Length: 142
Image (cartoon, rainbow, N blue to C red; front, top):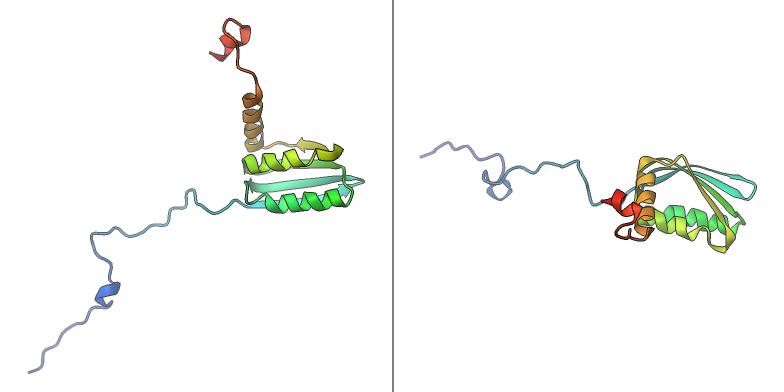
């Protein structure tokens, strides 16, 4: 006796159970480190002029740190950073900014993006002494 059967397209172990919803790629925040791009880099005498694009965090700041260390070794004493295209920055960027002025080097930030302004405002606010009760600034802060 012969019977005709239709085999499933996928073997049973590879088939997904119907109770589990399909996985959908979420294009939101991810865990990959940010990407900073050194869009342009020139020197004017002993001043390095760098235009940054992208995100600057602890991980993505490494190439920028390496570039600045090399420039310092080559005798650059000034740094102009154009941050108009920086979309995100955190303490990793602050560490770079803190490192450069050591040993008398000069730093200037130009065309600050909203992300850079926000970070610098947070740092400036955190460094202010707390307002005293009854002082004019205490009334504004409330």
